[in-house]
Amino acid sequence: MAFSTAISGINAATADLGVISNNIANASTTGFKASRAEFSDIYASSLLGAGSNAIGQGVQLAGVAQEFGQGNITFTSNSLDLAINGGGFFQLSNEGAIEYTRAGNFSVDREGFLVSNQNSRLQGFQVDTGGDVTGQLGDIRIDTSLIDPNQTSLVNITSNLDS
Image 1 (cartoon, helix red, strand yellow):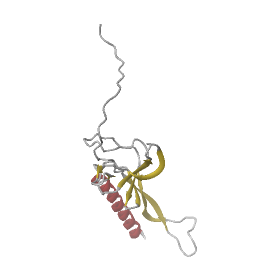
Image 2 (tube, rainbow, N blue to C red; image 1 turned 90 degrees about the vertical axis):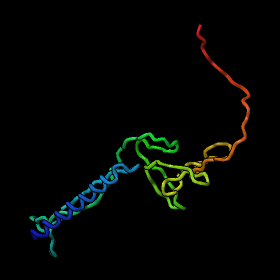
Image 3 (cartoon, rainbow, N blue to C red; image 1 turned 120 degrees about the vertical axis):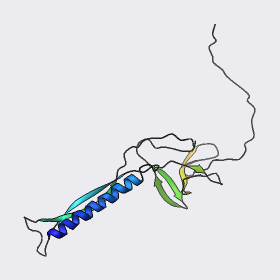
Image 4 (tube, rainbow, N blue to C red; image 1 turned 135 degrees about the vertical axis):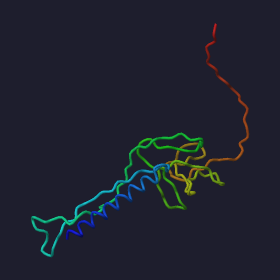
């Protein structure tokens, strides 16, 4: 029994090192949130149930929890990079499958859609032809076609001239 208790401790420490290693490996990954190993006790039991003075049989990894605290917001040279201040996620569509991420590094694909590094399309509220928000979620597309220029017809300036 003592040997299996010791082995459970070694297995739990190995699992904890795996979680820590993953945190270190992804420390500079955009939108990465650290994980935390959570452990629980293992108690001996028999067919008659555990007695009132049951001795523990070690430890086990109960789960790995994500830590969703606010990270640092870093400025980039890409004007399409976005950041979330506080809670929340970006919603993406990967050929109809919904995905969520906090990584806000986006670019425009050949069709004009905002996409992640994995070519998942960024979702957002759609607008109608009048510019009113419809409330329907859909792929965000940037119109990259040439727009005919319009001349300026009226300018209002409010200024204070130095005497």
